[in-house]
Length: 197
Length: 197
DNA sequence: GAAGTATGTAAGTGGTTACTTGCTCTGTCG
DNA sequence: CGACAGAGCAAGTAACCACTTACATACTTC
Picture 1 (tube, chains in turn red, brown, yellow, purple):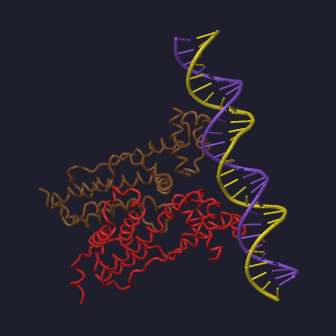
Picture 2 (picture 1 turned 30 degrees about the horizontal axis):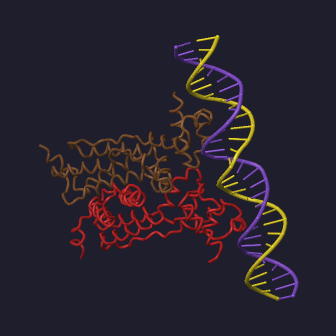
Picture 3 (picture 1 turned 180 degrees about the horizontal axis):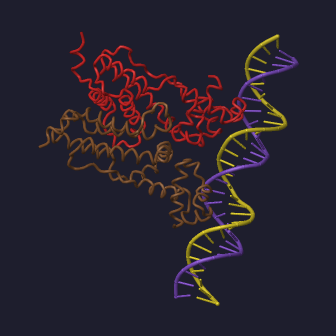
């Protein structure tokens, strides 16, 4: 593999493990299997390396929801599961970024290369459900989306930290969240099928 | 004020700003307005100081919910608001703890001096709603509690980081969460009053 | 007033950090 | 074969880290 890419990958991994201050150039070079001097010759400084590494690492595509809702339970279950898995996979890196944004605001700018935030995908989906009469009109779509996404986000962040609180299985949890979410927005289990042509 | 307490407070504050590695003994002593030597004479080492400071800082009482539910909307709104304010106030410290648990597992042990976790308070409340027939029986109380608490937690953690996503007001958000939560567990707006004697 | 306690200043310990300099090795290309 | 580019090695820079020693100063307490 290319040495630059090895260094970028190692930088992201070590940063996820130890944060900015803990990600020493020595440790990154060792992880990449190259000498520390090569790191500086390639990127000039630790800051330049970390910025490029985090920008590359935050390029994770957000799963889309169908434009035409057909089976909300299935579609939302799959989407929630994908959302959780993405967040859970990068949870260490996310926790470091969250804790260091105040000190290094520039690191969130490269993480904000997101074209759109997951909440707005779900928000649009809720709007479409409302448009077809499958969800109550007095629901604020943005708030509803934020609630489900927030619950999933918390599972991904906290689950492995306080296991005695989050004792249930993740499958069970996501299914439960989706079911309660649909009830909350007035999209009951049987109501969709009966309204289908 | 006592010098020990000043140092403990300063340690917690600097830790919340800069994390463990960034909370240098020099900076803590400066923040407390004492000399660095006094810090070491009082606590022996940075580690001992930080452990004591974080243990003290995590002693935040969890608001209780009434044993006898009477007005779910009001009771849950007040509880959610208190929960959010607590989390939002210590959000910087929480973010640091979350990002450093993997490296320093001992810091979560002192934070776990919680007698009970907020989720279990809400879980018990949902059980009591179910016992009186105010909530659906097919709802998993622990999951329901985790969903609302997770949504509030996410608001407290992320709100000030990506304001363009969380554009609505926090009052509006908490009210919406409580309303959707009650719908989700089958505790509709009018259903409680009609069942009251 | 003497003794003891708590705090301060000054200076320095060894270790680690990001980063640099000078030189050597190794592979590729003409 | 010879030129050259990219990588490594050894050593060293100044700054910062947690922590220590030696000594002076204030304040209380008997």
